[in-house]
Length: 88
Image (cartoon, rainbow, N blue to C red):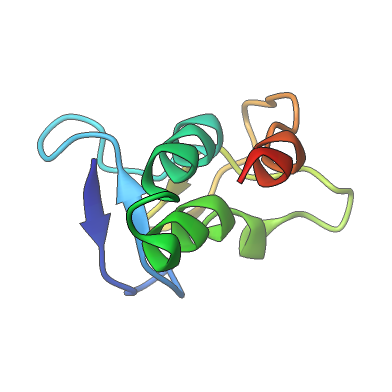
């Protein structure tokens, strides 16, 4: 993954899953990336886990993807963030 600095719609660092092809932060990808990062870099692991959560819709829906131009709610994913947090 590639860490992205805060800018535009991103208010904290977060992981892109690719340097070239997938230039968004995806809900599941960032959660599983967080689990892998946690043992070696807790700050980056936490940022990866929480990157999409600040865009949570009032209905509870978590954006996927979080793109540079804003939040997208067109796809829904089971909320793995809580499960991942328990493993961290």
